[in-house]
Length: 360
Image 1: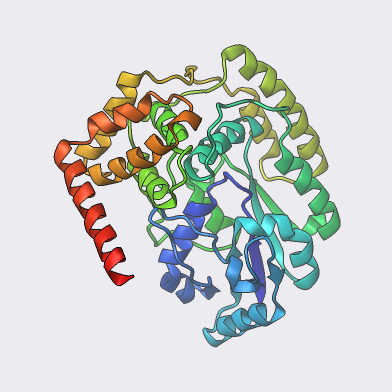
Image 2: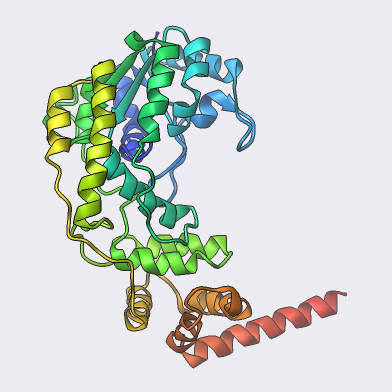
């Protein structure tokens, strides 16, 4: 049985690959490929096959030989010759997987650090509650330095590394490239996947960054879905041209050292492409109160967020107004929500309080 672990790393289209593999599970079985099923959130994102072979709770996961063996048996029962596991969590645990599954191969993509830098910030605002503005940091791509150490421990021959680059992808698309890498002929199947976990526009970043100050998981999830796809899709940069060029030079030095040390498909072409990378139009991180209000009205009018959700956010923000950045936006929330929504919300709150007192 061939065992393949796809480990990401982060910001290299892992969610898209997992969504395609999961939704084309039956087709893969006809090719002798077993991919353990897993759930997807409304964005098409998941932790992949993490729980297929690791047990425990968040922050305390352990490799489970029992779970792994069960998946191998399932693959054999389905007459498969190859099992593919995919999860970005595997990146942090390559040494463990390498030791526990000595026959396994590891597939990963390399993305230029300068691109990952801004994409990671976008994701931090979207899903991880980031409230501060973008900062370029120390110009070191920790992914490359960490991966280099892990490759040395697990073994160079066990890794298949590919550049994350549309121009270098097989058929200029990520899914066909991944399938070709793991030896699957995808000439007779639709490999399109649509947009998965799209990045925010500059306005969406600023709106979500403000709302991240509020502690409401349900609101954040709904707001995230509402802001995806908001605004135009024109590329932009949070780096000025000067900082961009200085950052690029640092990242190129690190990339060159990695490519010289490890075997990466199309290494020379990938480096040349990164060296020629140009900055997108600079976008300062500021949003006027008028623009903030417009975004809220737009996402409500397009039925991507309800007035009630905004009113709930207003109540929470009003209670903590003295602790918020741009506290004047609390009044904008109040202004956007119609009077009748506030009235209904207050009636529901009063009825709920009455019921609670009656139960006592």
